[in-house]
Length: 59
Image (cartoon, rainbow, N blue to C red; front, side, top):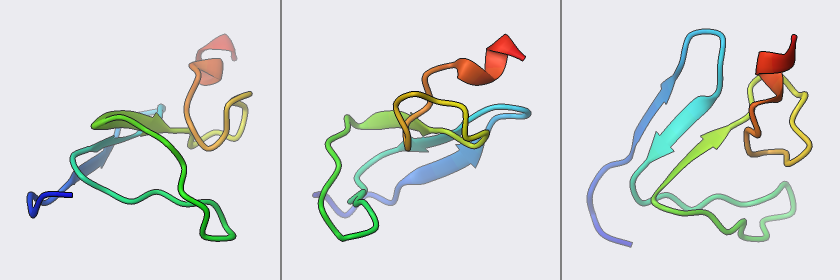
């Protein structure tokens, strides 16, 4: 990982967007693979939790 600070923001009525170098783990501390930009689900409806799959749009 580089020393560049990540940028994290929430889209209105949508996912939490993460850009940059971060270490994402599950609740047991196991690493979760991701790219340099990814979205986390904030509605709980995603089939790919913790990542957003756009399920919030189907409401």
